Image (cartoon, rainbow, N blue to C red):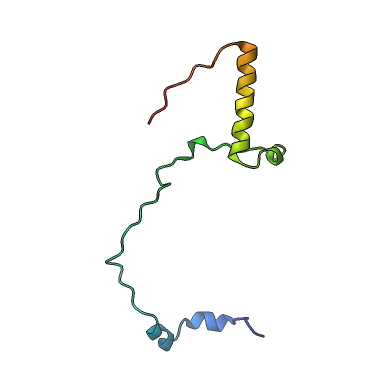
Length: 88
């Protein structure tokens, strides 16, 4: 059968000929590439329940809905919530 390996083939490992074909890697010149998202934290991540997922497919729809709720609250209560200063 094609594609099926036997247990014996796995235990033998690579052949000497195949190991000679693999070039030796030099990691001394390896340079680190900074990740632009590396400093972000997951503090603002919220998990949606499955029953509301169909109405909120992305962050924009969640933010729009929350802004509408905040606007309705401000109309009913008549004041803005106290906010903490954001750290830069």
